[in-house]
Length: 433
Image 1 (tube, rainbow, N blue to C red):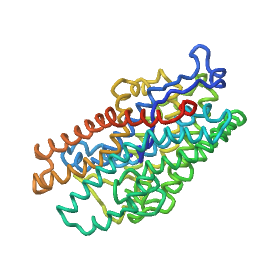
Image 2 (cartoon, rainbow, N blue to C red):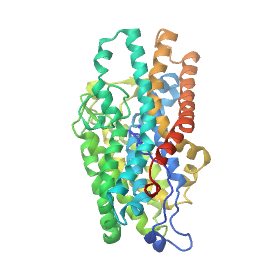
Image 3 (cartoon, helix red, strand yellow):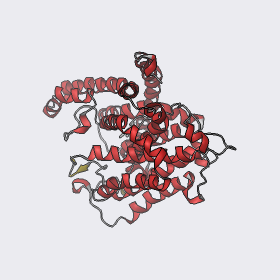
């Protein structure tokens, strides 16, 4: 669920400030000015993606305790695509923000400075939450004496999480189940730190039509493979086992799809005039419509592990074919970057959603731990799980939802930002830009 800042994914994106590129300034519409250094609606997209992942993981309790929410089950069931939205957004923001700084000229020193700054964004919070998971699993092992928990508590695997390489290998997640997307983001950052020189050259030499083609072709592999997967596989699994190479494929195709989209925006500036059917508000509506239509008309149900999981008659597996919306994420992000007057852009840059975007990384990282604790509380407090419509059950679910948001806010304000600033100060002045 950076991803990025993703995530899955949330993955970690920030509406960072950037130096104004000379080319963008010359290409921009003089009446609207050059491209801005900060695009608040893209920070709002982070909130949207994080809430989508949150709804995905909370969906059993939400649909059970509030039956009317079953109408939104197709949207909840595809919340794993919030990680894909993060990955696309991450590629866009990294290119939009760092292309000029890192490529004129590219040097290993600049690449290392970039990687340290990205690490300062994702590593401290990841480590803190990982330690929280370690304590929680130790407590669970002590209370339940579960041999499977003891077998899963591999010190070597814990070290892989610390080094952000756990998503590169074909093993089940044994510590924090969702920080694989940070590992994927880190892989994308490593590749980008070198590929940025090629992207900068493409900005100056490659025609816009070719850039559009590059953006679309880059996401074809994940779409082509995704539609063949099982419903409920979350674009990762087949028969409940991680598909070899799926995480690198997923993040790199979508990250560089976002990167090519950023090149198009930088080339045109705000002089671009999108036809009505390509504007972000329309694209957003189309994305939601496709998700519901695919869910309704999916005639090739291939349930994960053959399990037909339903709550109140509503299928709880997302149709794998909804991966076809990933190319529309490119249109959505690119359109939002240049369309300040769009209703969708206006909504996403409201104070509430910009705040949500800022805390989205912490929200993504902590929410699964909170959910796990909530389910244990429900099991102990209610001693049965067949009373989901009782008000006691509902209040527990709503309380833990609110607690997740509160923890994310506190974590962002009092840990994420201070540690980021501290790590940033460790760099020489010449490497902070």
